[in-house]
Amino acid sequence: MDTVPQIISIQDLFSLKQSFEQSIIVWKQLHLFLEQVEDEEIKELFHSLMVMHYNHLQLILSILKGERQVEEESNED
Image 1 (cartoon, rainbow, N blue to C red):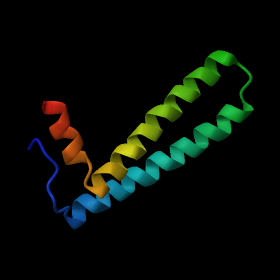
Image 2 (tube, rainbow, N blue to C red; image 1 turned 90 degrees about the horizontal axis):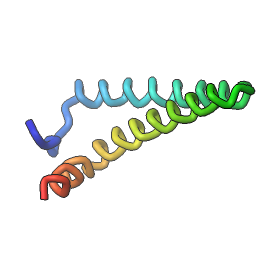
Image 3 (tube, rainbow, N blue to C red; image 1 turned 45 degrees about the vertical axis):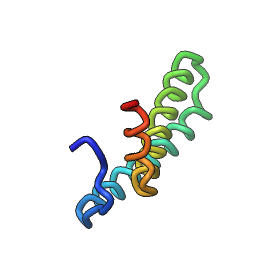
């Protein structure tokens, strides 16, 4: 299936909820670690991981808002 359906099942919603919760917990932990680390290389790594998890959170939110299908359709043009 190339597009996200207009209706999300309860099971899909539960999976999205779990994924969102896990990503936000990891993002918060990385933020805490980032404040405590002194090594610049590790800070950069934590920062890039934070960006990755933030983008994942935004993706989940866009699916829940119904924007994901529009995004995919515009990429096909």
